[in-house]
Amino acid sequence: MNSKSMVRMLQGDTQASKTYTFAVKAKDAAGNVSAASNAVSVTTSGGTSNTPITLTATADSSVRGGTYAGDNYGSLTTMSVKLRASNASYDRKGYVKFNTSAFSGNVSSAILKLYVTNIHSNTTSYTLEAKGINDDVWTEATINATNQPSEAGTSVGTVTVDQEGVYVSFDVTAFVNSQTDGAVSFRLAGLNEDLGADYATKENANAAAHPILIVNGG
Image (cartoon, rainbow, N blue to C red; front, side):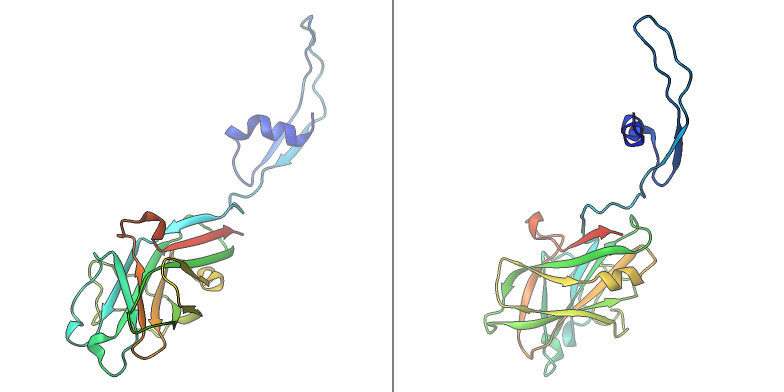
């Protein structure tokens, strides 16, 4: 029996990243038992899996400026993201947060995916930017334009939004690996004046459209 077979036999009782020592005795049909074999040591693999794990957002919301700056939109089924530098009351940003406490150490990849539910009537396509932010204290029940995280954030990329009913994706691996508090947050902003779209939140009735973070362990 080789060492891999031994591990398979006892894998229900083994722990990750731990060394086990085995010795084998043979018993024949007459009940005679041999002496123990030479001991064999094996070490189980680490606890982080390379199988992709999909995390659903734990919090998400849009914020709106101007006369709506104090309003909270955390219970809505979509979040609207639109740049309107000329009129703050129509400027909207999105926020999304994930719990990453299940992972220790660096991950090999992390992809943020947002589902486009609606492109605004005046928009054919526009550029959406995601920025990682260190402030994870905000909550979807209280966030608004007056108390939103004020830090500039770290850009994790841009995508062109030009189709409804599809996910858009950002590679956020580097930012996820820079966070060590068990949570990651992102701010979403449009880059083209007066153009925008809506994205499903975790409150959306379509569970297949919720914001997700797909993570591969290190």
